[in-house]
Length: 322
Ligand SMILES: NC(=O)c1ccc[n+]([C@@H]2O[C@H](COP(=O)([O-])OP(=O)(O)OC[C@H]3O[C@@H](n4cnc5c(N)ncnc54)[C@H](O)[C@@H]3O)[C@@H](O)[C@H]2O)c1
Image (cartoon, rainbow, N blue to C red; front, side, top):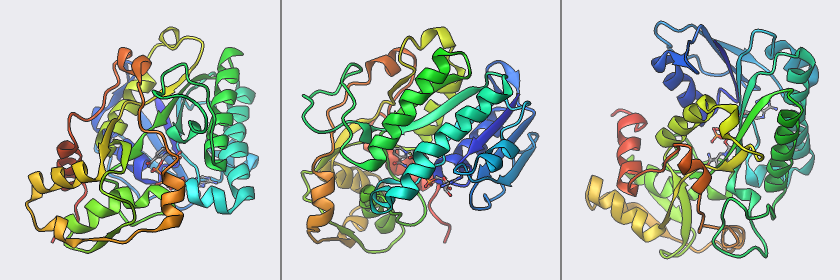
């Protein structure tokens, strides 16, 4: 079993690589090799008994994709993407990476004729506009950003390539990942991690929305668990739409801060500065948070039990030492 993680240098890709190496097997077969591919040299990880290679690959370039997607690739995790605010600012980059990059990977798999499993990370950004709440498995996709539109188009491609038997695809619409390690990124949702991460690291952070702002979240640890389960599902279980919501939970900013206080004491919350940012508010206020991921739950995927878990996982898995 050879696994290729494209976007393997990113937050989810690195954690997924480590989790797969620790598990040692996928789809009932021992993992012989994991390859982390990314446009930026991915950080190497220690896979223990499982060899982990790193390669550079630009999914916007079909020749580069052909070098990293090879006939011995059994499972492809397609995580490479540019995030929401970046795709919104740079329309061409969004099209060439998020849309054409996805097509390039699928076309390469088709050309090889080996029908690999392809696990695609879509986003809840595919929902929006005038669709009624709650969002269910049968809600139509109505993205209100270029990023969301590119993910929705990726889903359609994944479904059609799967229907034709070129790949065995499965797509998961990720909730917003929090607490995300590392530095703030160019996603409009970046503050949804930084208002917890920075204070937990003893640093100040700015919250640009009100305490009652509600959104839909999942911890990185649960996300990785779900991506592994997602690869293990039988093709027959997926039905006529290979893409589904990944379970998360809805929390307000106030509930998230209370959870941080319950786990880490009262000091971190004092480091949050409240500064309204109308540009961020304008983007995030349209986001949907009443989601019912019934299909994924039936298939065995799950959400965090409480936001306290998200905070604990950050402290256990990611908080820098010292
Ligand atoms: N983190 C979230 O909250 C969230 C929510 C919804 C969906 N997602 C999706 O999950 C996936 C993983 O997210 P993440 O948080 O790890 O993001 P990330 O930004 O940490 O990782 C994405 C990786 O893709 C790489 N990449 C960008 N352009 C590339 C290209 N042309 N070729 C090859 N690699 C390229 C980047 O260098 C980066 O390492 C993405 O597809 C993202 O859209 C994430």
